[in-house]
Amino acid sequence: MTKVKFCKIQTLDEFKIAQELGVDYVGLHQISSDSCDEEKLSTFATIRDFPPEIVLLTKSCGREWLDHIVIYHRYKYLQIHVHINEIDFSIMGRYVNQFGVRLILVIDPSLRYTPNEIRLLRKWAWAVLFDNQIGGLGQRIDLVRVPHMLGSIPPRFFVAGGLDATNVADVMSATQPWGVDVQSSIRKDGKWDFELSQLFINAVREGMKLSRDGMQP
Image (cartoon, rainbow, N blue to C red; front, side, top):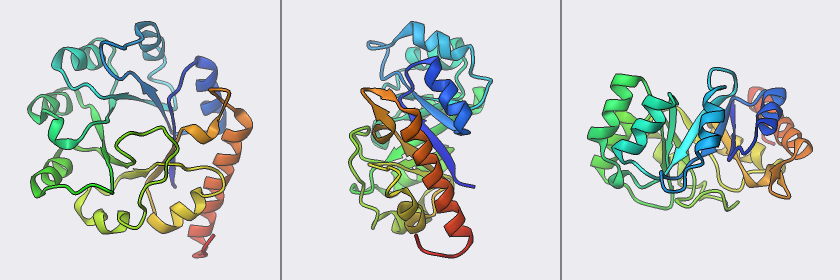
C-alpha cells in the first residue's frame, strides 16, 4: 500500500484532517534553530505518539539543534533537506544508532551523486525522498531518471515535486514508490484544504487500484 505524506503542517486542526483522511505521515518544517517555532515544536511533540507519524524537516545538522529535536522533544523521524555531502554522518549516526531516529534524505534526480555519497545514503537513510533540492514550490521532478537510480538507494522511497490529484496516479505508475509526498496542491489560502486533500487521497487510492489490476492510469 502506497504511503501518503502531507507536508508543512501548521496547526492541530490540520493534524485532525490528516487523521480523518488516513494520512500516514505529516511533515513539520523547522528549518533551523534560528527560525525555530518553539511553541509549535512543543505542541506537536505532545502528540507524536498518535497517528499520523510526524516527520520533522530541517536544513540544519548541528549537534546542539539535533539534540534539541531528538533528545529534548523526542522526535523520531528526521527529514534532512540538504545535499548529502553537507551532512556530518558521524553526528547523524549517533542519532540513528543510539536513539533509533529514522532518517529521510532528499535526493534531487537532476543531480549526480558520487559512489561515496550513495554508500552513505544506503548506510544511513531509512527512506529517500525524490524531490527538487529546494522543495515545496510545486515543481515537477525529472521522473525519467528515477527508475535508473532505484538500484542505488534504499527500497523505501517517496516521490514528491508538483504532485496533485490529476497526476499522482501517473507518477505512481511510472515509479512504483513506497510513498508520495504532497504540499502545495492541497492548500488554499495558505492552509490545508479538506476537499483538495480528499481529492488527492482518492487519486492515490485509484492509483493503487490501477497498479493492483495491472492497468495504466
